[in-house]
Length: 78
Image (cartoon, rainbow, N blue to C red; front, side, top):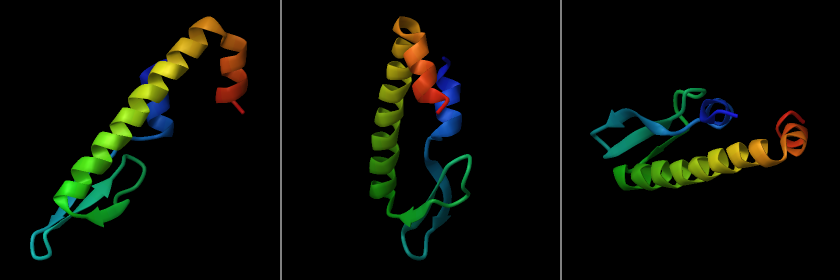
């Protein structure tokens, strides 16, 4: 299992566009141009939280794939 497979299925968030007049930014992923429009602080929190979850999911997937590949396959490919 490679991290890129997790990230393809559950993409990371990033800043996509700015709305200076209202002080907001667009949150996007590689699958969706705009997920939400939020403040810069909310964007930072969303990106940080999602990155932490995806980092953990990548580690769990790699570890399970190494120690119990049959179980991993049942979970990942279902």
